Image 1 (cartoon, rainbow, N blue to C red):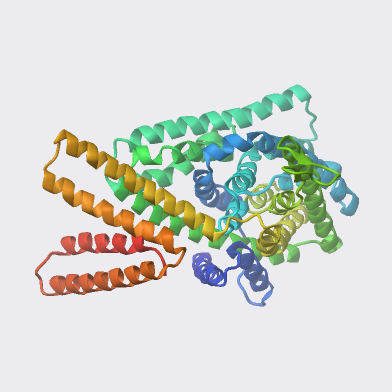
Image 2 (image 1 turned 90 degrees about the vertical axis):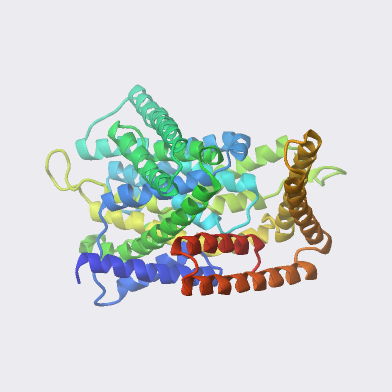
Length: 529
């Protein structure tokens, strides 16, 4: 089977699996990895070898960009201190801990053990975002775990470069050189990201065609990554900074039509890329294990030891930060809480600690390991290192991925549907009242025809009454259900008439498409099933 056919088959299978995962309310990344591992063990399944360029250049930029756009800048300002500590301090500690364990359990040299630690030290933004997207975590908690995974790349990449230079070239480095390199990676990547965001914003403000704007938004993460890597900075940081900046500007540089179209395109692209890449991660493990030399076959125990080390190190790093934050907030430790006092809670740090999965970024780093050293000799134990990285990634995605949702439920930290519904309803009411207040101003100024103002007032009065009914009757009031059913019935009647008009030749296809979109948007605003 040719490679193109294999990739297309993989995309089709991954898409079906992801669709079933959504219907079964289980994390798609974890199920895709499991299916990939099982498929890789079946005799006769074509061997799929992933090149680092496919992961780092084709797959990674848009997934990082989508994760960065979801990040709340307002919540990020509130959690930047713990994010900075985790993105730097915890990465350093994790790398050292994994290096010690790997050196003790495997034949890896000290230099290669530290390379392994650097690769696995940071949490993965793609995996974390994909898993967190289906959990109703409190905004600041979700921002913390996502921001940490997005911004710890500079630290792990610096460690990776230093360790790899020692392992490949046998060279040494100084503290001053490491500091300069870190500033170059972090600050340089941020600078590239800010520049690309400014350029993209400038161009998109002058583009009115939705198709062109969508293409620009698709090209932007690739441009940030390529420019960042080309200048010797962190391409991942450049993409993340670009996404965060543009995410705050999206309503200022695009119109509603453009945003709807772009959202649909991006949702489809991210679904396909995530489905494929997590399936590839699972497929890679059996292939890499089969390629291992006989002396390196006992790899399961080292992988379990490395995974346990990462989890334990993360718990030890997160719990003191959480305790300090709670103590600053007035929680009490070691005695019964008095009136108005709050006991330290362990549930929040447990969820944050357990959400530190590894995924696409470590796999890309491992695959990019050179085949030979600077002397021309083969890089020792490269195959074992690849198995250790991929095995750890698979275990974290399976174990933590499948158990994260139950742990969130146990911790009781998830935002309930009732709270989300109330927030949505109150926001809709305030929006409608703001519009009605503006109509009052226009009426007083006689700045528009009375008939137009009255028509608009009637529409907003209806919207306000409908939303207030939802608030009065609860989440699924009978009146809302009846309204939704009747409105959809009317839309179906309009749909039938639209089809008839087009079939009888009374309207052109262009008019049909325009009216079809209008009906689709009206149906979308009704929500529900």
